[in-house]
Image (tube, rainbow, N blue to C red; front, side, top):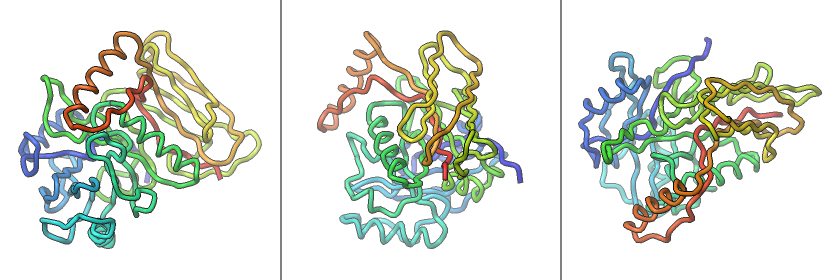
Amino acid sequence: MERRWFKGDTHLHTTNSDGHLHQYELIERCKKSGLDWIIITDHNFNTVEKSYSSDGLTVIQGQELTGKLGHINVWGEKIPFEPPYTLDSFEDYTAITEKAKENGAVISVNHPFCSNCPFRLDIDAYPLDCVEVWNTIQHSDNTRNMQWWVKKLLEGKRLPAVGGSDFHRDYAKMDFLAMPTTITHAKSNSKEDILEAITQGRSVVTNKPNASMIYLKVDDAELGDTISLGDGLTGECTATKLKPGFTLRIFNNDKIIYSHTAKFFEKEHRAIFGIKEKGFIRAEIDYTLKGAFLKSFAALEHKIFSGFNRDMPETASELFWAFTNPIWIG
């Protein structure tokens, strides 16, 4: 079956935990945002008893397993225990998530290097299916998530990455829903096909539903596929809606093998490139904050993070706008 692109949000909250919208209010907002699928992940609560379709929008069952040691999303199947949960150790967490996985659930570690609520367990040892690299609107913590994820890829770990808006409410009249958006290359937007695409690494994460998109191929191989390295192996990448100053970078492992910075708005930019190393290919759109923009961004982060009484993170001047999962070069 031919695959198509479906827009979704992996991380959403309702009034059943600490969100400000009722379940059906949230669903209607997601339809208006142009999403094809969503996962409702209230804290330690099963809002969606069984995945279903609402006027073509797939609403997937989920729950955010939430404790002081970290937050983990469980997607697709109900956690086979009733809260309150004991979450005081690595074993407490894995006892729950491994049982859920036996029933077919997908496990994602959320915002692992968050300054407020990081993942305090051994993430390298945790049995997870994917990781939330991009959490809510772009901020410096996400750059640390990205650095850790890329390190795992370079070590050969085939760990898919997703983004999730972690939507609770709008702030200052700004619509934070589906910021970011995870766009999956799936056979359909059914629960089964979306979760299969996510766990196979067939996703692009971008700033919001109508923001830039990155299409990456190596011969006939697409995201999540493996292709053998050979003489003359060639890749193709198309990036859309490049803003002035935004840079498309294509990586072969840790090496940048193609880079293009837009001088003006580009509806579409196409790149052809050769591949010389085994490992993986991935693409990313980045932008740099300078001058007054960087100072304002740093001041905003300081205001937010200082309220949590945490160590202040270093403000990142270079942020990412969109990124792909890898194509593996065998």
